[in-house]
Length: 420
Image (cartoon, rainbow, N blue to C red; front, side, top):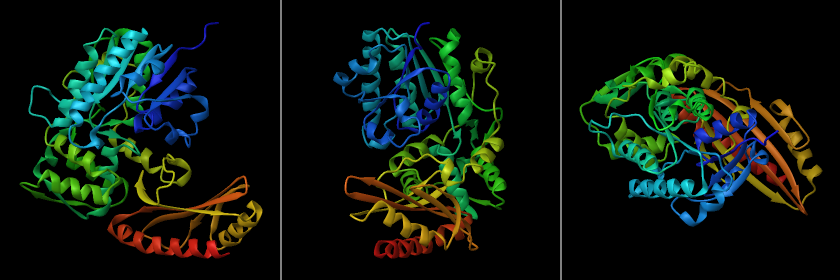
């Protein structure tokens, strides 16, 4: 029996790759995950089941070994977070990738780009996404290009922007183009299309626009999220808000970094809908999920055990609907002694789960949101490491304010633990 095909997944530390790789593994494929910083993948549940490779598509010398033995390669890379000049870097990386894939005899490239009408005036990042696809197709390896707009799912940068802005503002200040049309697609449906393209070769060499079953407006998307959370929201429409100002505010209040917010906000100033529905005809097995269902699925993931553990040494940040504060202690004390102190402290809370080296407890006091404390202990040589992590899902603007008080409480608990 022949061994399963080897699949190369680029952008392995990114959002879509983290959802795609587990489902590729379930289907029996061998996976090589390419990332500039592969150590960031060590916390993934699937990291031990894949081959981790270090590489950067802007450096062609790093690609030959990554492509060795590869049947199909997923191109899931963007450079929006790298600041000025990212469009040139994207095209340079795509040219290197296409050339290396051709040299290695790769059979198929699957690319996920952005949904926009290239005949219209569109934002630079969407133009770059379209030009990246054209650059990949200019090579000799057949390319299936999918173009998606807003991806609806916990962890998606566009969804998290909607989530945090809607939670924070009872009256949402917004430019008039929140009335523009959008066709959001659920995360799982994006993955469904990426998987379907592996076995169905009818999409080879094609550009396929993908979206969910409904066309709506950005305003209605935010109201849909508000309804699912039991929030009442209104809009205060302004004729003009500078893009840099919106990006600055989004960077402060959401998990989306300012450079990415700047690129995304520019993209919202035009419609993002499917004009050619070929994908539905080629891949009829994909059952599309509406935005409301995608929002409700995201709500089910508001628990520390259900989010991606993407952090390492970061202290305070926002992630998948959570405010998170992460602290680390290293001590010469014995592992058992340290964890005994944790157990005594955890008795003051409602413990949800406990194991040999981990405890998760929920804070049961009345809060404008939900909060948990988690402790994890590890032992390496003569050093015991203990992390204490606070998770908080804010509900409404009071939750955003309360987070700062909750962090002070967290630091107080942490200091008590350090002294014990």
